[in-house]
Image 1: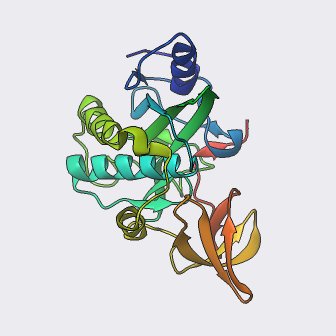
Image 2: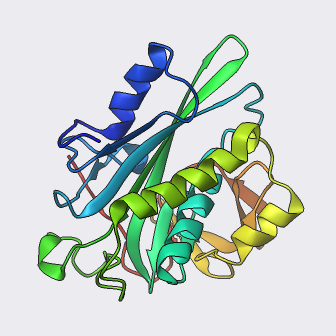
Amino acid sequence: MFARVSSTNDVLREAATRGAPAGSTVLADLQTAGRGQHGRAWEATPGRSLLMSVLLRTEAAAAPGTAPIRVGLAAAGAIEAVCGIAVQLKWPNDLIVDGRKLGGVLCEASTTGSTTSIVAGVGINVAQREDDFSEEIRRTATSLWLAGCPDVRRATLAGQVLQRLLAFDERIARPMDAGELAGYAARDALLGHPILVDDRPAGIAAGLTPQGELRVRTDAGVATVHTGRVRIAGSRAVAQERAP
């Protein structure tokens, strides 16, 4: 447990290059250079968020896009186990409660020989009050405290996340099976909604492919989205990231 780091992913990635074993975990009270999707800065109040990264390894990263999906499922399951709060997932990496962003995941992978190392970062707002969020994100962000779960111990929540991540083992970056796809669909915040990708109309969200790509139904058929900033058409951007 660190009081202050640049980011938990940075610390763990460096440890991985020195041979840290799978399951190694870094936690911190404060990140000075935390980041989210597309390299955007991550905003977190010191001591009021769960900030953790876990090192996972696999010999078959056949579907790297599934790693953030599974990490999101692990985080959502952990939150529900500890708090009983229903958590939705917004592709590819957001944790959503009552339409607001509770947290997110960031997976960074590197391959040496036949082994792929995945640093799985998880950030969850635990004890923030409204005034802890900047004016920019106050209307789109939330915390467990604001969602009605005020007495969460970060260590307990971290243990639940870690337990679920380690259960994936070598499957972390393999294609998802029908059961996993159904489990994701039950939490899918985008499913059935018209969506924008990078602020352009894309179609109706139609779930995921086994490789973790977003399926979008259009007039021409079903397309897949590999990357991009996605939101429901007509909604405010749900984010906890600020441009650096």
